[in-house]
Image (cartoon, rainbow, N blue to C red; front, side, top):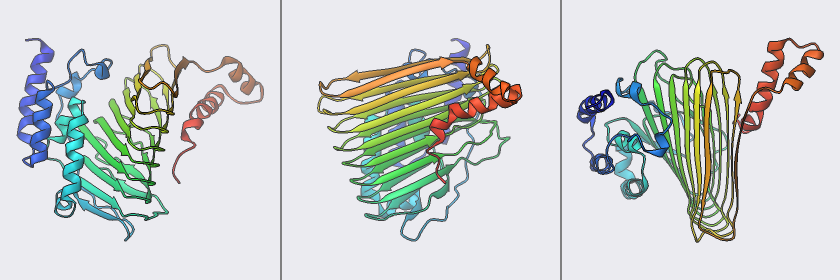
Length: 367
């Protein structure tokens, strides 16, 4: 047995007593074991991610914080929500278990951790963003014709050592809109975020992620466009320094005609930091007239920093518009010279160019 295999074995021994006893948690654990347990070395979505520190740390338990929401919106602890939304939650969890391929998402789903359920009733328009301290499990249902904006605060003890896995499961019904902004925060913990979203006819789902400023962070997206006219936009900005690792994995799945998606992720890397992006646009045969776009851009500020990028397309329809791309470079020396010639110091000029690089992603910030 190798050292890594020994760490994985010990990690699973520590995790198993934390399993929940609700039927869906038991099914999640069974699915986790069925798919082979912890991520294998040859799993493409974990290719650039070293989990050694993860296996050597313990889970950080997040407190459940009940937010203040408008009277027109319902928010409940997940277990209490089962009393009122039993059929819906069972259906959503069954669908998640059917499509989920990420081993850590399944493992986390099987653990006994606090959760919330947010319900926006039909045709309800929530005018101001709702601030929520994101729990380990967060289910959001935006009903037909409704709209809502969420700002997810990932609050915990900044000095807490261990790992944190948060999963957002969002269902956006016909003609509904959901805008989500993930807030940044400094932390000593290892952060894993999973976003699962399904969109019905003419639904909109927009997400802007400013990931955790921690030693290791991973964002994992799976967005399913299930109805004609569905529209998804994902924006992300990574800023890393020291020896931090930031990893992003995206699966954008077009399963209906006339759907649109847009992905734009940027990274600014300094010192010895590492970053990877793997994004896939998957277009089903029935998803004719799809319009999909994906772009990943990296700004390297240090010769020791490292970035890996793998955008890709899988297209099984013959009448679509789809494109992807990636760029990686340093600060423009001519632009630096231009700014310095107009009185800016070296650091001021660098800061201004970095801000300009980030601005295209940050324009969607919720106020």
